[in-house]
Image (cartoon, rainbow, N blue to C red):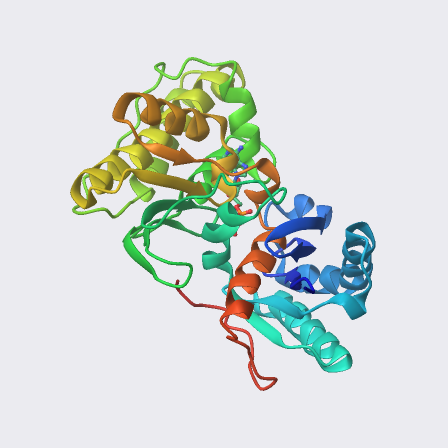
Length: 340
Ligand code: KG4
């Protein structure tokens, strides 16, 4: 029987990525990042779309080559339709349309947020059975989102809690920025935190109802701590950056896990996954392992390659939609803003 082979394309922000998945098993996943944004302390949309234009052909060619297939073997092309930066999304969408029409294969449109959740279903080999069972809860934490999602099937996802202001990744990035650390700040804070004492500073935690999150109060409290201490010691940040990072990281992780525990308790669902860029954070990963031990949760922590934006998650989502014959027509345009 012939295999179902899906090409996934991801271009929602500043990573151009292409991946090949055959019958649910990953064959390749190639990503070109964009260092150009570092100098600006954040992603510059116009520069991002230009870089995608330059990268998309070599990245897709390399993914096909590394998978050991030819483009004629493809069953379908799946692409991120949104949410994301409009110019960036347009590059992936237009490329997918061209390829699908040239090869006469179906095109599958993918919601980037759903793809992050379904990254847990990417198989490393045919006998890889380490996937979540439905229903499960997924904590989706990235630069733009902090959500608790109840997942009952690959296409049935309900957001039961979300941030009312900043996302967890933004809290990491913005606090790192005020300390004069580089961009993106999350991985730098993670690294410095390993050398600091998480109990050295106390920052405020939100009191929000239900399963929703808020990180703007923490950001302000962090800023005030710096401001008040710099008055007396102009080297305060430099002398305390490890302790500041460790305390900031602990507060963010506590906020995330407090609400997640509440969601597990109220839904009775103890199968819990984490996804998105912030799931690369060492303290978040450790907190999941600790909760598995302490509360009997069955936890799913993604491989590092599948935490930040990648096309393998787009290809696996495309694979499930392809099996359902859920295809997309050529008149579809990207969505810059869309929820799960
Ligand atoms: O999912 P993602 O790659 O992009 C979107 O936002 O869609 O997530 C990027 C976010 C950034 O805020 C980055 O600082 C954060 O993930 N991040 C981390 C770590 N690695 C990436 N935050 C904390 N610790 C990390 N190790």
